[in-house]
View 1: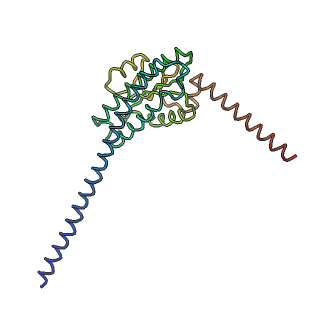
View 2: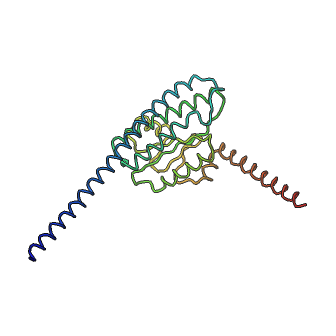
View 3: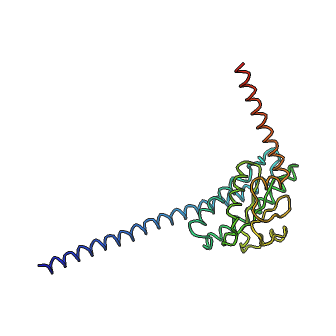
Length: 241
């Protein structure tokens, strides 16, 4: 009798274990399938964004100055691509072949954008505000992530600012040429501001001070803020009287 009960218990335990095991496999496969489908959708969207960017470059290159919004004309597609690429890196890893391929394509688009902005603004008599950023995500740059946050904040505060980010270790001849032009060393993070390279972590104030254009915009913003605060204080005092 005890033998039958023991056998029955083992059978029940086996069944429960099998259900849990195969249930875990099914759940894992389901979510893996969902993630793969999501990544495929992102890859397809990136392909469309790339085609859209290249078409946009061709159109804007021959457009008149009046037809171009110099603040946002080129930035939306690259920003969207950057966000998707970051997601791909976090999901698949920085060494994934598809991620590296997309990063190379994105870097080429950045360089095309950089050259196009220079050409268009030269034609239209406007000096672009640009920062070129070289980083590494191979674990050999402790401050690169923090620098990325600083540049994101600056881009939010200054819509006209254009930031071009390049992986220092990316095996791409165009990126190597960019490093050669600005004589970028391996001491990262590195920022190119006004054609000059600067190394090591720079906070928001540091970057603003290194860029005469950003410094001028910051001073104008601070002045406007003080005038607004002064007007508010005067209005409040007049109300009380």
